[in-house]
Structures are given as C-alpha cells and as structure tokens.
Image (cartoon, rainbow, N blue to C red):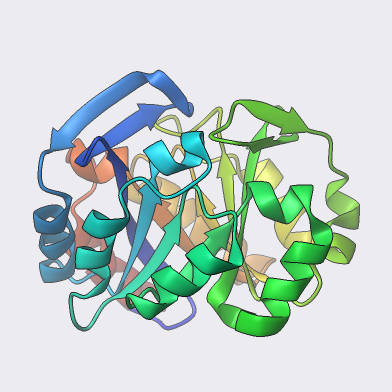
Length: 248
C-alpha cells in the first residue's frame, strides 16, 4: 500500500468484545467478535499495516477500561496501532506508549484544555493524533454525549503542530451511507496536517472517491478507517489494499 494513503481497520471494544456503534450511539450496538485480539490478527493477516483501536467504555467513562486487552494487541509484532477512547491524562498516554502503541488519539481533552494539548504535543510530537469527531458541524466530546462549537477555518490555530487528524462524521458512522466528502474537503483545505477520514465508507467506490479528492485537490488526505464495511463483508480488506496499490 502506498505510504501516503492507508486503509486502516477499526476495532471498537466494549465489555471486552469487538462491536460497532451506529452514529456513536451506545444503545445502537452490534457485536462482531468476543475476541478483539483474534480480530486484530485477522486484519493483519489480510495485509493491514495499521489498526484503529477505540476503548468505547473508556470514551464514556473518561479513563481506560479495556487497557489490558488493548495492550495485548499493541504487543503484536509488525503492526502500528493507534488508540483512542478515555485518554485524558499524560500518565495514560505514557502507559499506552510504553505498552507499544504507535499513536495516541486525543479528542475530548484536546478541545477542553488547549494548554494540556500543546504540552503533550511538545512531549510526544507526531505520536499524538487529533480525533475530530463532528456531529452537525459541532465537535462531539466525552463519548459523543456533549458537543461544542468550533470554527473549522480557525482549526489550524488550535492544533499547533499536529501532524495527523482523524476526521469522523458521527452522523455517518456505522451507517454504510458513504463518507461526507464536502466536510472532508473543507477540513483538508483548512489544515496542513494529514487527514484520515472515518465514517460511512461502505464500498470501494467510496474509497476511490476519497482517493480522487486526494489526487485532484488535497494531497494531505492520507487514509480511510473502515469499520462496519469490513465486518459486514461489504469490503474485502486484502482486495481493497491491492486495488489501492494499483491505483497509484
């Protein structure tokens, strides 16, 4: 797979199981595996170079709940792992990195405490990713239960020297209804950071639409996160990776 565009499988963990939510709603949950570690290995065997792990219980509670389970996945060799959900302190960041995490995704605390965000960015640099979860053009926080207003045109000022952003349209997440390309374009044009898109991707056509946007307008678009489309067999990961390789 080209280094500047990645297909990243998502593993969302709740109660120690691999699940998917619809539109970030905890009462709309679908279980796909009782063994997230096994699922991680499946995606690695299919060619994934990077995994997107979310502690859904942690996102809701504000602290890691599935730390031990996630740590087993970060110890699998030859895979980069980015982790989000309930990471609100420097100690938690350090613990996950010590356990082998490649990247830490900060959402809630990054927007609630700008000084904290700049501090950890200074310490850990490119290993910090900003999780930009949007719900009706507002940033969703605390397991998507709160929202705050943000000016996307002023995003660069808030970010500091962040290298990567994960943009998720909550209204699309888990719906298999296609990504929000308009918002993706707006975000990609307002920042210098690499932008990974998540939410709604349901087919190779959706992936190619994102790729087209990258090639024609915004080279900083750097990948897609796939969740339900993989678990519902709408996209074959191995084939998707091969098709993307051929398109470059």
